[in-house]
Length: 155
Image (cartoon, rainbow, N blue to C red; front, side, top):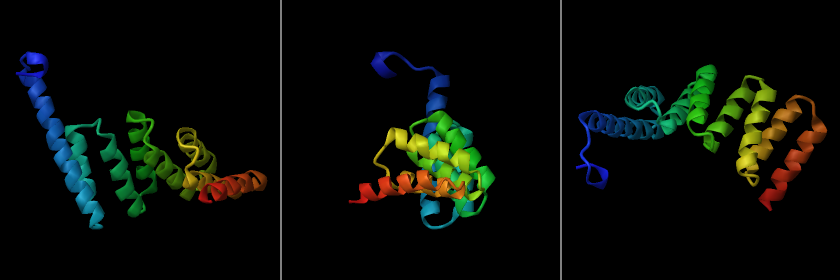
């Protein structure tokens, strides 16, 4: 019996099984990542995503593991996919901004930090990182304003 007493179809059951299996692979990937085994974690996230491509957490965490391996372009693709699936994933926005900043794509990174700040104006790291990106663009007055805001949030 399915939800509300109605039967579920075999297709629904298979889809639910795939999502559960995907979660298991996702959880294994998280444990491997915590052990610093990022290559193995990525393989688990890939398996999780093959079973449930809408698992935005798997996209975010795959991006995190790729970032640790210095795969910046692929990292950005993963964070973009996570954001597409869950536009309020602040971790993905912030980490995408960091990866873009690392590639000297400062304007794009600022847009990411702006999204974090829009959702959470008290995010110290977003203000600080936005200030760094602005300083890299030699927009020093704006960067100082961001640093001041970050410092005010620390107090």
